Image (cartoon, rainbow, N blue to C red; front, side):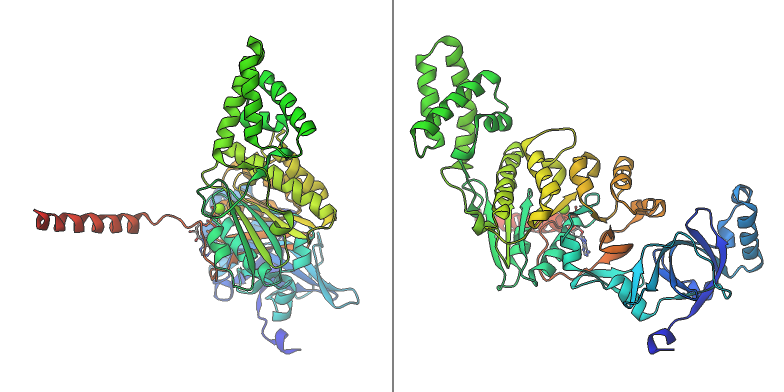
Length: 507
Ligand SMILES: Nc1ncnc2c1ncn2[C@@H]1O[C@H](COP(=O)(O)OP(=O)(O)O)[C@@H](O)[C@H]1O
Ligand SMILES: [Mg+2]
């Protein structure tokens, strides 16, 4: 017996199949398994492989009502009768999670079997350290710890060669996890680009080690960050229509103006478009003049916002090795955000196709805003293109959302690695069930009770899904902190108190 194996303990014995086809019941003593948490991994060794069992429930006699017994199969009832005689026992409900097998290249984890024959002893034990490593320690990105305390790591290529979704309700810890991933990826000189609708990743990017290059873009003159403007020459009348909501008449006038400018001028600005619209408004017949006036009004708003210019940052400047780039868009209207995201994602895709930029990770926060289901917006199309074709050009898409049900289903289904955190909403649970390939009903049932920072990862790089707690130590600053109401108010009150106290002195 090697040293690692010496540490294992027998925890209980397999009783037989449970209620579901992939469920096994194990009887154990409270003393041995009292501290085991749901999600813990147990093992049963047969002559040629190690069967992995994941704890889904722990039941004592006191948990079972007469009614429960009535509903049980004869077999199950027998199981539970045992508990009646041994009140210091648990029945551990376990899911058949996978198997460790050696097919000649050393032991590996597989997702089968669907069934197995229990060894004569029926013994169930905890994992050896080697087995824990095999299951949880899968690469060089340290993201957290498993329920039983093993370090959980992700493989870089295994993770990034497929698109990834991070799903969980508000406050479940998605953005915090994105921060953890960025920290880890930055150690490996990753090229990362983040679409950040709330500008919450700026503090994270700013607090990365100095060796990591960073580029923080904002929109408009007031953001205090590098300005991101869209080159007006890349914007068609129909883009303008989509993002401003102008009518058909105005759009066709605008289309003519833009066509003309493109023909006659090598360079033009949004004010040139406005000037031409103005002269049409003054010179033409009533209906054309009205359409031009409307077009001008819509465009004037855009022109004033400062988002549209005559140049845009070079794409090589946005996506580069050992660099994190964030585009913060807080305070910017949703349509403009979509406009911008469409522009950048199209440019990233084209540049990557021509290999002008390195393989890149594109993280889209609040992805349901940019690729909403049931809407054929340009930003949805741009994200779909990345989702369906980006992989072969070395673009890894990471979509982060609290409403998977509202995210375009093509985009969601292309994310074959899923990290799911706490989710309560039934329609969202349903879309997770449909899109995540190997999610079990047991796991779906657990998601509403997940704690902040708790997550499960599923996907090709993970033959069995791994439940883990995202590590709490971050070296970088998290921008999406929950508001500390109590302290905030307390500080405000002490300020006001001070003023009141000083008041008499001024008299
Ligand atoms: N793993 C974690 N460890 C410690 N604090 C966390 C963790 N995950 C989230 N938090 C805290 O919980 C709050 C919400 O997390 P956040 O990631 O912003 O949620 P979400 O993006 O899902 O809405 C934040 O204040 C964050 O600091
Ligand atoms: Mg968030």
